[in-house]
Figure 1 (tube, rainbow, N blue to C red):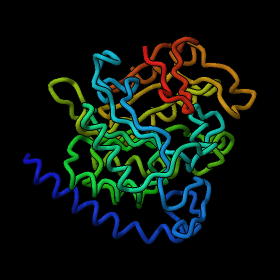
Figure 2: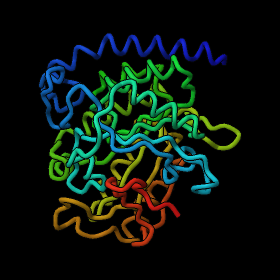
Figure 3: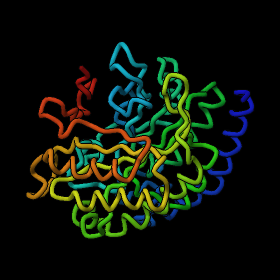
Figure 4: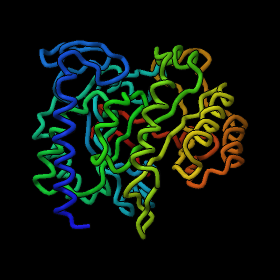
Length: 328
């Protein structure tokens, strides 16, 4: 398809989304928290963000799924052009990115600066632009995308969210986002209440992810096995909760399809405010129980991790460093 035509269609979709969503900011209902603060006047809710995005870092990421980062690591894989936004609308107690999600560390950026960050990552060879925690900053992202597309942005866009998204917002992203990469963290409302203060997590996440699936149902790879479109659902197996993980997988299989991308993560490591029962890594048996159920259900695009991660394999980022990740 002609790139000029694609860009024109993207810009039209961005204009529509901005026209529809911008009024939400004055009494914010851009996510299920519905804080109703006036972010246009500097007020902040759970996400600690007003009308301007705060960014921790933008970098080439080599640790995403191989269809997003490429294979081989630094010097061999191109990498995913990842932008880590500060603030978060979910705030899990065990978050490994707590420096930016909870402590809100990072720098305020203008829409023009955010657009330049995207274009710089593209120039450095990024396979895509990967927005990490975009839910609460969707308006500055859209405004920056409008600038970036007018200046030559053309690589796929990845919406990398915690899953606690508003259905109404996701509906407005049709024709803009190429690859959806949501978490589906919990099935149990008790777990989501306990660890993320969001007892309604699954109810909102399932609706948002069903809409993502409607927009991008098929994981489309190029000749180099790099994703250009599709849906990849991530699920982190938590200590002591393999049964909840299995319920998540069964819901995906029954309500979406076993052809969606499923990234089953074993990388849990206790961080920040993790409660006593989460003060350990998962066991081999816990991960295998969930992995075996995924195989039994017949997931066709399954991404697996070591079972479980060894201590030296954890890539816990330190966002206070110039290079937050210790790539091997």
